[in-house]
Amino acid sequence: MKLLFINGVNLNMTGKREKSVYGSETLAEIDAEIAGFCEAHGAECEFFQSNLEGEICTRIQQSDADGIILNAGAFTHYSYAIRDAIASVQTPVVEVHMSNVAAREEFRHTSVIAPVCRGSVVGFGKMSYILAAGSFLL
Ligand code: DQA
Image (cartoon, rainbow, N blue to C red):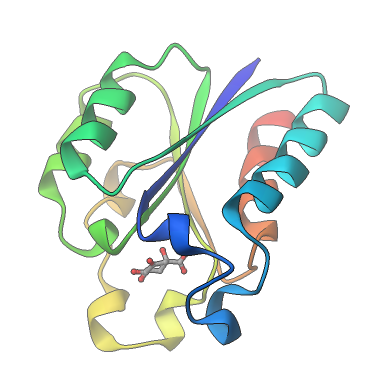
């Protein structure tokens, strides 16, 4: 079992930006914890972050993973390109958000990718990624 974790726009700033919302751990630190969880459950994992919408679409199209865990960041709310990339592949994709987007600004209440994802894990900080990985591994 191989899982691909994709983080979209601005997620590279995790640990530096809006710490009260996203925490003070960097994305590299969070990825290391996720890798530990995956390895403990016998799964391979890989990580990809990009601020560029098209690069995320290409990564989804080219993935050979058994599952994708995607935090698309703000792209979630308006990227029909990422929505269509997810719809174009057989690989199941689980949507993740660290913050509880339903409790934030109105524009964050819409996810254009949710309808083409297997499910969504929202609001549990870095644990959102691990819970999403658990949906494949537990
Ligand atoms: C986010 C929520 C998005 O609304 C926001 O644009 C992000 C991060 C989250 O993980 O909570 O960049 O995806």
